[in-house]
Length: 381
Image (cartoon, rainbow, N blue to C red; front, side, top):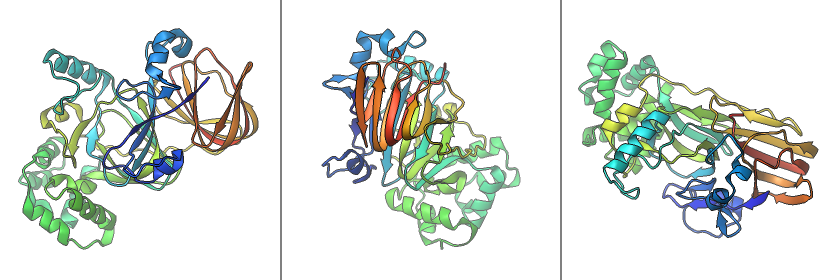
């Protein structure tokens, strides 16, 4: 077992206080993410050595016989403003796209590159604060209702056909029109004049907030075509590959397959490749189910997600317990309190905001103390 220090990401949309307060950092600028994992872009540190290098020297010790690489990436994410609308590729799409861009000689640092690695990126997000997000296309009936209520139909040439026959092919044509980067000044002017009231009041308020950030992007209407999600602390959602989404505001724990593949669909100054995006995205309606983990003392309670890459669990420690045997490396992140983590003759003290990496070969460690702990692990046992 070793203490783990996260790698920090200072993206412009990050919070100026959440990660700083949690990790007790003096950082005046925005901090968006703290990465706990071995992704080569930003591996966590064990002492003065990266977790990536540590594992490369003793892969069997850290990963076990079933894994040839670190399977997941755990993050703390804190957003003070909206992230880009985005989608993550499937495993096959990532492998093909990464190989294709490598063959073309596109450097990983090139801003026009779509694929940073060859892995898929399903993910689960658990809120630590009140959290707002957009996730999955609304049902086509809802979408028509939103457009009609906000009087947006006249701005899109393909909308009348979709309204008359709201099915996938007509929606695909409408969505391609929304993706077109050409600004629509009359649309943005119209959004700014809408009165936030009635059934779509929250969506109108979010459209007007997005308008201030991206006045030339038609995707400010995303709250009408994507589901607006509001999470309370410890509530979670799962995002399969191909599902379009955007985090709007708040902080939480994010866990995903070990990948940094992001195809953007709007609300971003970064590269957007509509053709590649449409090969990746699911245009079917998708409403994420709320996932919870009941607070049960001295028991590991998982947030269930239908993937092998990762498992996220919550532990309310009051006294003593033994962690069950789980293949692969595990990360413990202490949210509050203090705990002893004991394996054979080794004992580490886990304080609030500290994290520990436990190798595959150190199974069933003992926990003692009073603490709230997040556990990340491989799920493909």
